[in-house]
Amino acid sequence: MTEPSRRAIVTGLAAAAFAPSAPALSGEGRNPKPFGFEAVEARARELAAAPFDLREPALPPQLAKLDYDAWRDIRFKPDKAFLNAADSPYRLQLFHPGFLFKRPVTVNLVRRGVATPIPYQASLFDFGRTKIEKPLPVDLGFAGLRIHTNLNKPNLLDELIVFLGASYYRFLGRDQLYGLSARGLAIDVEGSAGAEEFPFFREFWVETPEARSDPLVLHALLDSPSLAGAYTFTVRPGEETSVSVRAALHPRRELATISLAPLTSMYFIGENDRQASDDYRPELHDSDGLLMAAGTGEWLWRPLDNPRARRISSFADSNPKGFGLLQRDRSFEDYQDLEASYHRRPSYFVEPEGAWGEGSVMLMELPTDNETADNVVAFWRPKAPARPGEPVRIAYRVRAMGRDDLHRNARVANTYVVGAAASGAARASEAGPALTRRFLVDFTGGDLAYWMPEPGGVEVVATASPGRIVATSLVPNPHIKGLRAAIDVRCEAAGDASELRVFLRSGGHALSETWTYTWVAA
Image (cartoon, rainbow, N blue to C red; front, side):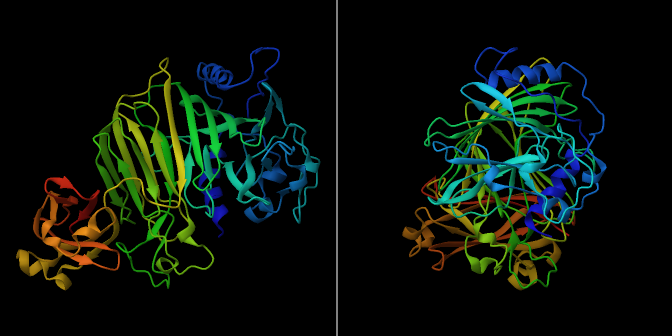
């Protein structure tokens, strides 16, 4: 299964359950002001005041029955791309409805404040080997959109950002390949199986740039049974492409489980979780950890895991400075995959604009037995519920990064879980092997190169709850120009889920970010 199909299957299942798109808004007639975010929010407020339309989408049967290969063979003709003007660095292409993408999406172009819908035309697409026997309706709409620009070379158009399925979108920086996804919104992510609600973008407005230096600006109307919302995405391509997001959400009901700025990724195998795999590739993941910048100034690193059962972690905070799912392993040797090139997958880091108040960064990890399933979700959960008549307003920036230099202190490079018998930890703690584990954590960067000749001047600060720290040690690791900490942990009973925290300190000052990990004694 190819990379795009993984995303299509996950997101298309949600998109299939919702109603057709609303009529397009215009900058003329009903709204004499230049079209912008306020016009989209007015429509969102109007939608939220009415019951959600639960009718099934009316997609022609010949499109609804297409399998993935047949749908993928319907390709937009590049020479028909919109925004194709001398003063525009962008090219807009559209996706054809079909397969799992059954809910038509309206796409509009905005030029000088006036919004005009793009009508569906079969002539925009090359159907390849896919045969469509009957004429398709003229109001069919589209499945989504993507934008190309000169991202990697001045004479080559590369895909910059794509919106396809529910509220999912993905974007790239220079020399990156698609991996994880961002989402506009998620609801009931951690609910029971099948309970998650997938809000979807039902309409887009793409502004025509006035100059080549202008960023790409898109507006979107979001809808779902629980709320409606208005979004503006401002995309600035570059080495680290950024997407600034502004949103206003209007609930139809009280929502205690709203998930803001959600990120979705895949973690199957890593150095801290080998599973029982006989795959020749050492690691398989789009992201290998959650990084959080707390409002207190502390930086937390949580290595991802492929758990035996669903695991939900919560990091309470007030006015966080950022969080994201990162791909820190950047060497080909980490993966040995010539096709997937996991070492080129981007990291996405969310940076709030303004005060977000009290809440939690949430991390949900699901078990998976393959590399084709997105099994990791990270998001911000406000402490206060969202209520009808009280719009939720939020703004943030998401960066697609290939580097990891977000703070000055040392960073976690590797996490290894060592069997107690192999480490000797069980004998040292006088506990059974299953109740004791040794963890090796490699720290690199910051000021650690200075301390390598004399690591005795550095303290390993470690805590476990429940459980206790039996012993710690610290040795130089010249291969990463840093230090390796060994931490022996003991739990008193099988099934204890111990939250571990480790960081390096000298003279009362933190030298590293805080490594945090959940270990279940079994």
